[in-house]
Amino acid sequence: MRLTDIYNKPDKVLSFEIFPPKHDDELKNIDATLEVLCDLKPDYISVTFGAGGSSNNNKTIALARKIKEQYGVEPVVHLTCMTYTKAEIDEFCKELTANGIENILALRGDYNPNVPPKDDFRHASELIEYIKPKTNFCIAGACYPECHPESESRVTEFKNLRRKVDAGAEVLLSQLFFDNDVFFKFVEDSRIAGIEVPITPGIMPVLNANQIKRMITTCGATLPARFEKIIERYGDNKEALFDAGMYYAISQIIDLLANGSDGVHIYTMNNPQVARRICDAIKNII
Ligand code: FAD
Image (cartoon, rainbow, N blue to C red; front, side, top):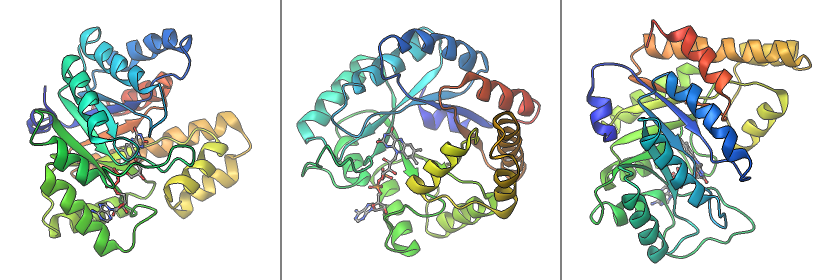
């Protein structure tokens, strides 16, 4: 089913993100994860894709196919472009089509010091412009409620986002954030900028202190004072931080849905307990 059809349904859209395991022996564990995730009846599951130089990208496609065929859930395959040529992207697209994939999340990818960018694609919008006329994929794009870390200005960021949508992105999935007001303002400003497609909030439950540090440095998410208090109080207590992180994510999701978000995308980090706990808490809400 195409993402646009999923978002046209009257119900709220529940989706998960997973990543393909690095090592072959972990592939066995992915079934245990998928069994729990798919039992929670998500509308789709998105599968991440390396930003070049990774043999794991074949695993992305295999995992997406497994999600569709074995578990009957719609997959969305992330596709990065910065480190690939047009010919390589053509190959990926052929492979995706041959594997029955209908939806992709078109991305530039993060800079990787070990894999230099190639010349064919500098931005996700260029990937979308390239593949839209020659494939039948339903295409999603990424968006950043707190601006992308490389952003020149908020105005430029919206112009570039508009470019992505004009090129053919039909749904936007957001970067993680911890302050819902930032997301609500972002959606409002997107509408003012003429961006009309569904914008789905991405929520990542915080489960440990190292993960928080990593997230702040890589994606620039700001921490609201009430969240900082949680880290200050429970940062050294693994179990307490897990509980508090889950509670924070669940209250964020309830607030988002209550205020009109048409769904929620949960960064599961391949942890089925995380998804189960969230879904149990929101089962009568979503
Ligand atoms: P772009 O849309 O190209 O934007 C990047 C920056 O360039 C922004 O500041 C933008 O304003 C600017 N820009 C855009 N277009 C132009 C233009 N035409 N001219 C000048 N400037 C422009 N990374 C992975 O490697 N693998 C994944 O699977 C993955 N999944 C992700 C899923 C989600 C939901 C999100 C939010 C991010 C994901 N990422 C992933 C990270 C993503 O690749 C990085 O954030 C990357 O730095 C930017 O990707 P993008 O597609 O948003 O880039």
